[in-house]
Image 1 (tube, rainbow, N blue to C red):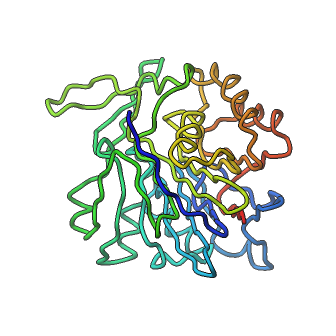
Image 2 (image 1 turned 90 degrees about the vertical axis):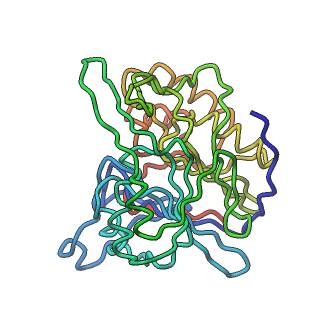
Length: 319
C-alpha cells in the first residue's frame, strides 16, 4: 500500500478518558499520568460506572489553552455510553467528531443512545467503508456469533455526516491522525481466524484481515506519539510501525486500548508481540478491552515501569 506521509501537528497535551471498558474497579489506584474516577462521600450511593464487553474513549487535545474532543467508538449497549458520560460529567455536546475503529457491534452499539441524547446534529462520523459489512465469528466448537454492522439508514435519519475513508485522515486542525487502513508487515500478526463477512449475494466468505480496523494517533510535544487502538485487529505492532511511517516520528510514548490477544487463536503470538513492545519501549502501556489476562500479565512483567491496569473511568494525561 503506497501511503504518503502526513503532517501531524504536535499538541501541548492529550487527555484520554476511558468511557467504556470490560472492567470497572472503583478502588484501582492511579499512577503518574493516570487518574481514576474520583471517589466521593456519596459515590456508592449514586449510579455506578458500567463495564461491558465494549470500548469507548474520549480523546481531548490541548494546544495553546484550547481544547477539542473526539469520541472513539461507543461501546456495545445502547445506553451504557451516555450513562457513563453522565456519571463522569462528560458533555456529549462538546464532541467535535466520532471515529469508528471498525464495524464490530461492541464498538458501535452505543451510537443510537448517543445520537438520541444529542438530537438533530450534523455530527461527523469517520469510518472505513468495510465497517458496513455484516459479519460473524465462528468458534472452534462450532458456535457462531453474529456481529451486525452499523445501520446506515438509521444514522442518516439521525442527520449524521458520514465520512468513509480507507486512507489516513487528519482531524482538529491536523492534530489527530486517523490511520485508516493499516499496513500489515509483521510475520506473526495474521488477522482473526474464524471471522467471516457476508457478500452482496448473501454468501459468507472468510474475512480474517478486518481491513476497516483503524487507530488514532496524537503527537505530544517533547514526548512523542500516543496511540489509541480499540481492538488492534491490524496487530498492535503493525499499527505502531504504521504510525511511525505516516508521521515520521519514531518515539512511541503511549499505547492505550485493546490489543486482541485473548483466546487460543491469539495466545501463540503473545511472546512475539511483547518482544516487539519491549523493543519499542513505550513510557505508558494501558492495554484493555480484548487484550486478555495472559497478555496483560506478560506485558506487565516485560514492561513493569510502563504498564498500568486500566478500567472504565480511567483518565490518562500526557503533556
